Image (tube, rainbow, N blue to C red; front, side):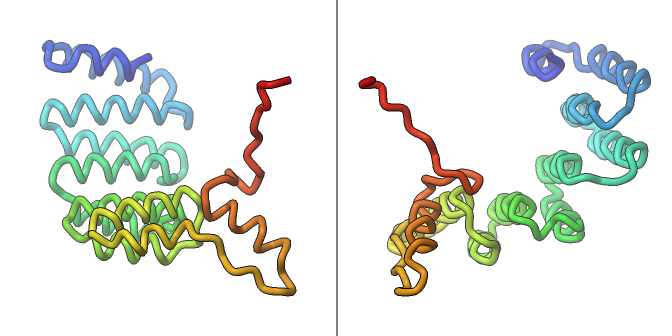
Length: 192
């Protein structure tokens, strides 16, 4: 709800009032669930040119909740990136214990592209165990770099080793993005 209110009022002079409202909400309950309110507060502060206060709001919630979990870190690095501190955002993400996971690496790739280092972004995505989503993201970066054949190769079926035909069969669907979260995608037959 707050997200929509903040979006609708952008440029209408209500940022100060909304900032006070969100701060009141956070003071009333700064539990883990309120990370969304913290993200909204960070957006409002950032819009007012108060980037360091926005970062402090994220840091305060992390301190209150026992640490900087990955979603909160993503909010922090996005504020840093939007304020022109992309290298700091990259360094903080790399230093986080979840920075090397597929989702941390994916966010890192986005930051590297923003920093003008698409080759490093490609290498980052190539280094993580591929999911269909990662393959699709990597394919986009490869195409952007004019490496279309490499992008298409990501979705080519693997050759099935003679002793591992079943696994190779399912892997081809996974690589093509037809398997989400390890489960086959279900289709509905509308003829019945």
